[in-house]
Every structure is written in structure tokens, then in C-alpha cells.
Image 1 (cartoon, one colour):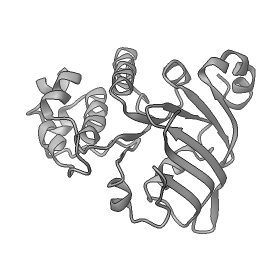
Image 2 (cartoon, rainbow, N blue to C red):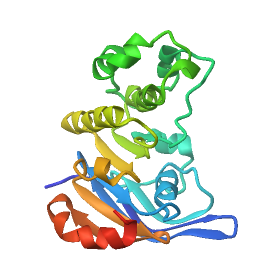
Image 3 (cartoon, helix red, strand yellow):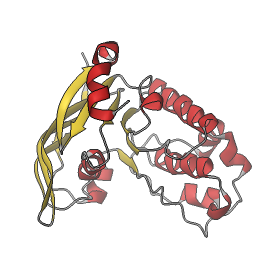
Length: 234
């Protein structure tokens, strides 16, 4: 039996007067890779931000391992074992790669050591003393993911990590996700790059206008390509 890590029920989110999410329902089981698909503006990033409490007003339920978190402050949500990697990466330009890596606090036991991270990301070890501004886009993205692995987070929310990167770097990120899954991490991906996301996910949710319009498993991908063409233009 799968153990449920995350459950979202009837989630509504507002930014001021704007009603962005309209009753989102989804579940993520421990050790799964789940991808949220949809066009820009469909509500995928808002869903990730809502999980960690970084949106406007929220209504509904967000349960992490059965614990209701919808009224928790963001730092309390993080201590439930959640790591969020936003699209903008948030690398500190004035700090070296290793200083950036050491910056986040420990949220839970079991975080990766620096040695383990360097084994997974050899580029970062080579660039350990380089300022954040000197890192390539791919190296910055690896660093952004590596930082949350140090914290002890076991549920990783990754927003558009392949965007704007060379194919060889995208392939390395795919290998990283498969490696993390093999180590028992649970991952929610928001991705515009369907070719990157498709082989990695156990299950897919398709979003449109702030709600989930379809859910299907990896084994059902082929039979859903027509629907994906309609919603995503893939």
C-alpha cells in the first residue's frame, strides 16, 4: 500500500480580488514523482506556492502526512519536510556556491551532507568557491536544488527547473530526479518542457483555469496524448 505524503482538497486561492485556484484536488504518495501540466497561467505555480504558504488567502485543505497545514506559517510548513525550488532560483550573487549551499537551516534529520551533494553534482564541487554570479544557468539550477537537499526535506516542489537550459544540462537534471526518486524522495514537478517531464513522472495532473481537469498514470500516457495536444499543444 502506498503511503500518502500530500493531499490537497478543494483548494481555493485568491490574490487580492483575483480568484486563482478553483477547488484543486490532488494527492501525492511517498516516493512518487508527480508532474503538474498546463499552459502558463493555469495555476500550477500557484499550487506549489500554496502548499508552502506563499500565496494570498487560501481555503480548503492541505495535508502533509495527515497534518493540516493550510493555516500554518511558511516556516512551519517547511518543518513538515517540504523543500520548494522556485522558478527564479534565488541564488545569492555575492556568496560563493558553497556559501549558498550552506545557507538554509536544517528542517529535519536526514539531509544530504555536502560530500553527498558534491557526489551528485560534481560541477558544484568544481565551482565551490565561485560567486553566484559566475555560475552558468545550469549550475545555478543545480545549486538551487542542492540547497533544499541539505535541509532534510523529503517532499521537493520543483518549479520549471529545465527552463532555458541546454539539452545536456536538462538530461543531467532528469538523471538527478531519477536518482532522488531511487533514494526515496517525493517530487512534484511543474514543467512546461513536456519531453523532459514525460518519462520521469509516475502520475500526471493537467491543470486549466485554476483547476484539475485530468489525472492519469505513466502507463496511460500514450492514450492521453490527444487530450494533451488539446490542452498543451504538445
